[in-house]
Image 1 (tube, one colour):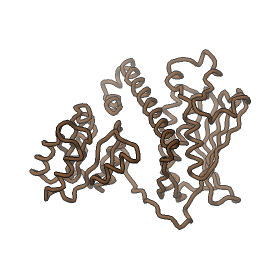
Image 2 (tube, helix red, strand yellow):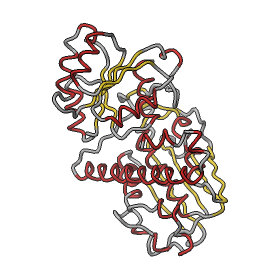
Image 3 (tube, helix red, strand yellow):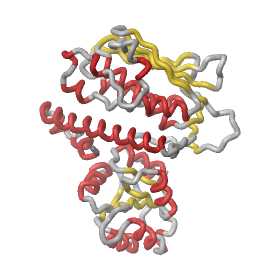
Image 4 (cartoon, one colour):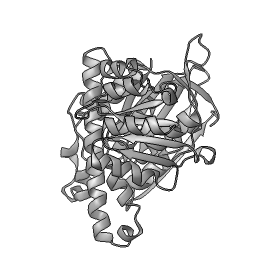
Length: 360
């Protein structure tokens, strides 16, 4: 995914429409597969009572700022207007909740709206009723095909889809790429419930659909929360460009991807095994180390233990590069001394945001 993302930015690729479309299709299908895997992992966590809430402090504008760009890509080629309307609420409104889960709900609902709407409009309304000042409501409206009344009770059931209602003419390549596995709305309902809210739907077939969900803003409660660092998106901030990063990963494609992302942005050194990482760490001081967990000969757990014994790097932040994502696995990684985890597969914004967060 990361390689595809970088390739699509190449001027040569952008000048070849057919090749660009082929790579773009590969990227979209990869993202769809990753979303499905994430949904399945969340369902598994739910069934095992391991799905957790990560309370953060953030501004409303930070939550919705990337949605127009996402919708522009989803609605490409369609005559649809997308608007976000803030009703009796300010974009600088401070929220304490789980930003990632709210974002996942919004993305799932907006992707559904884009999938089933061919013309007209899609709108996101955000507001706080006077009657419930602690609640923030999100309403997604579309002028799409709507849902049959008989199907509405099943929308939040696992693996239920309404693709059978699509007209045959709608089954072109772009539509097939957007077909879901029937888990998105279940995830929305699950997350909303975890955030002490509710989600509802109303629809008129062939006219449109409205999904409304609300979450409880815990801003006035006596709780402990994690502050979110404001991060410059998709680039390295100027004040940390002089710093240096050591990257250790035995996978050549991962190393090449990271090099493509970091080229001309920050100083870095890549190595392919644990012993090489130890050699470099002993020779030179690095400001951040990205360390793969699963490697032959010497895994990440063994390497970090030895790096911490080097005087130069006793306090150096070390981030685990890993595909492990279950709570117990993350706990084991953090207990071993890693400061954070960067989960594979990752995109450009993931690694740049992480570097900014740690080094700024």
